[in-house]
Image (cartoon, rainbow, N blue to C red; front, top):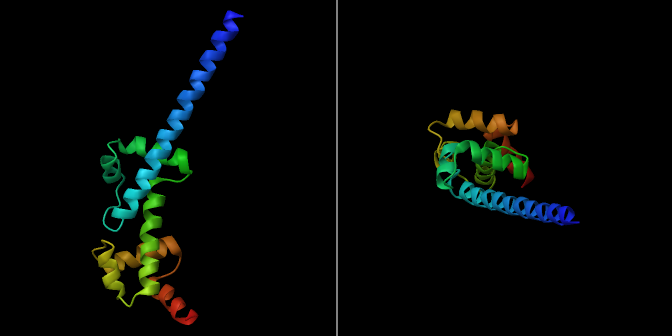
Length: 133
């Protein structure tokens, strides 16, 4: 009977540790997303976000993958592309201005990045907006 009670106590304490770890990981993920929304237009390195969260890049990558099923770079790229799509759809800024605002040195670099992630060029994406209006 004493062994059963001890096993139950150990199991419950282990459950609490797992629950606490999950809460911490979720908190890290939430803080990471907040940082991404603030900085992704100019910061795209895992090391930057890890340093802001006082974590190693490897640990941050592990936690983000564990919580979301996606990589750190997935979330950063998603944020950049969403910002680009909003700018292309709702502003009259040139593609070069949008590229500069998103931290790209060259509009061609931005265009390749955009196409790699959306399978569409910024110009084609913008034209689609014009047709739908």
